[in-house]
Image (cartoon, rainbow, N blue to C red):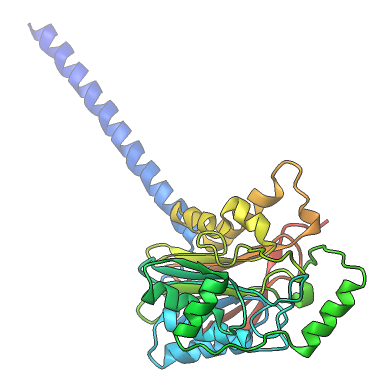
Length: 337
């Protein structure tokens, strides 16, 4: 009996040791995973808010957005007002008034906006209305729909008090006339170092919103719509995780649902920078990818206020306004050959 008790007790002790060791290992593993996640997300819990980031060199736009935030406005107001600055900038020939036309000479605009609750609005192939981003917000707030297109989007805008005007400026018309001589169509990498404007903001409450607006590819086929007005491709916001926006050749962004992908990678624990890099990797590593012929860039922000940007080719940039600094930041890039 004593021997039996000894064996029984020894067995239980062994089990206890094994279980204890296993639990210890699990705790240690969990701790290490937590550390790894912390490193991936970055340790920036004291990030200064509010914060605004945008694609390309658009300090005037981010300054306007920050002005709204510092005056007590929310992130949604900020991104709308910031994007409107570029839409009204006739010298920026890829956004709003003065945008380069399609091959038929029509300036057509695409835009979307998304708030902290996941509500969103979008317009595609909108003509004769400068502030497409504001029409997109009206679609979000004043209709049961997410997206309006073409003539329907225009008529809705007019019914909301927007004024119709000719968006084809003399400079853009002249450029179109020159293009028609040979009428060759090929996406130009970093055209004038400016493309779609995508903007993300976090207000003092820590809430995130985003917007995206563009006149699309110059001399595109009539009716072409890119990624910019498509929620999940050109823009995606998840107020619990972060947000991302895309620029460049929209067809390639759509194929990978790029902005949604960036946010989901952040949900898995990646930093904004790492998430942008992996999203670019999904494009360039596809079989038979001709990535050397086009540009795509992403910017992203997480709930902590950490940011990231990455592109296929050099010269993509992000404008960042935070802690009193409104600066252009050159993005790291994939194609260094």
